[in-house]
Image (cartoon, rainbow, N blue to C red; front, side, top):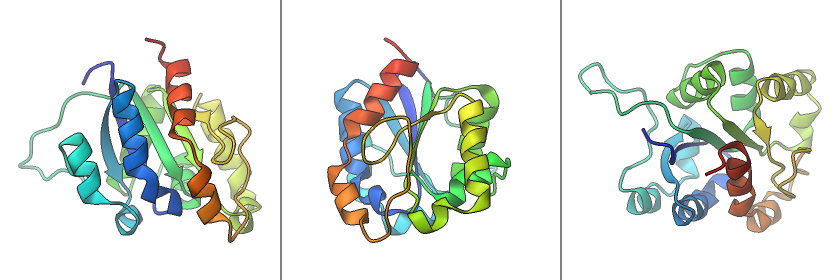
Length: 183
């Protein structure tokens, strides 16, 4: 893979409906995104729109032994949106899905990574959450708040997901990529 190849990991949350917007913004900025989804992302993701934009369908599963590997590591990994489940699993090194394996490998090899959590206030206070975010910060992962684009991430108030999704700006992710990978 080249220095403009990005792996975009999407999880099962309302912001996943905006994946085509993020992919379009990445393409317009010169990146070449490949979309990888968690199993629960498939219910939220417009697979056809992503395939039209990228030329490839999103990947949800590990390749079969008969399939050839696809290229080398990407220049960066973006997880947008990142859910409570995915963040907590990756923080402890669980890689029981293809999306988690991609994220864990990125963290393990130091690939620049951007994480955009979409976690409601009911889960945000769980005792494991702060520790999981600390693991990501300590690994050098750039965090992006879903409402502001700033690195100080906060919970999404339960019931406000629609408004948060509508106001999300793909440019926030691109700004972090440019900070991590100046071209």
